[in-house]
Each structure stands twice: as C-alpha cells, then as structure tokens.
Image 1 (spheres, rainbow, N blue to C red):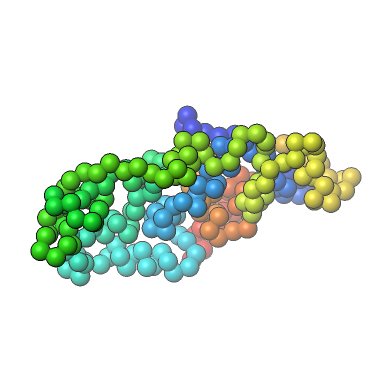
Image 2: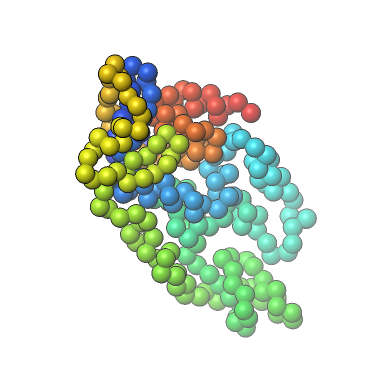
Length: 230
C-alpha cells in the first residue's frame, strides 16, 4: 500500500541462493521496528488475526465472545481487544488507537479512565468519568514520539531475524565479513518500499519466524503459507 510514509530498505541478497544476507536501513525503519515493542498485546493480536501461532489468539476470541452479562458494569471489552497505545508505530498509526484523552469523575477522585462511559469506583461516588484531564507524557515518551528512538547518524544493519545494529562508518564492507562469503557468491542489491501493508506483514512474521525479511520481501508466498498453517 503506497502512502506518504513509505520507507526505503536496501536488501543485500545472495542472488544464486535467493538468500537475504542483511538489509541496510535508515533511522526511520530502525525506529519502526523498535516501536513494535510498544504495542499492547491486544493490539498485536488484532493486527495479526486470523492466523497466529500459539493460543493467545484463542484467549482474544474468548473475550470477543464473552457476553456483557458476565463483565463488570461500566467496563468495555475494547479495553482488552483494541487497547490504546501511547506511541503507535508510524506505519500502523491508522490501525492502532492512540491514547490521548484521559478523564476523571466530577469529584476529582484519584482515578482516571480513557472512556467517559466508565464510572468512578470510589466508595459512594459512581459518577461517570467525564472530566477531561490534560496528559503530560514523561520525557522519554515525548522524545520518542517526536524524534524516534535511534540517531540519524549512521546506516543500520538489519538481519533476517530483525537484529538491528549500526554499520561501522569506516567501511561499508564490514558487515559482509560476517558471512564468510566465497568467490562464487553473486551479490545483488534490491531496494524495496515499506508501507503499512509491509509493516503489518513484518509484525506477523516477527511473531513466528526467524527469517522475517526473507518471508516478507523475498518469499511472500512462503509467508502466506506459514500464516495459513494452524
């Protein structure tokens, strides 16, 4: 999917073996990968449905199917199924709700909520949490949202297993030394675009594969097969 937030990623490929050695990425892609760690589990499951490894998807569906008769008054299932994130990954910002509004009751008890449908649990209160508060993020979250996580001073090497390390600026050939390449290897550079569709695919691949970049950019049909296997 083409968007104005698309990123460029340079893949270094063993052409004969159709094998990815590593990728060269800028700050934007490194920030995107690291920001995946900020996603709430509920959001990760929703974004990677319907197929995912493990039973956490079944747990998610059990909450989806649970009737409100069995849920505490004033609570919304979306708190678990579609939780808000303080700093959604840039490519997925349209898919993950951002937590920007907080509310207290009119009595200003020491409880806050993200929904005005929530009632204050303070004894004898029970007022709706309808008084909007001004949220001030801490310096770390604020800086991350404005400037990302890593510095824009070097190119970053990303392995197939999504290990991110800075490339030594002295020589662009240093990463190749790690692969013990022989004279018969034919290297190819392949530049790909990373948009929201690829970002979601990388999130899915990262949860069930040690070859995430290959699955998404070199062998997408294989990734689709992996996703279809229960």
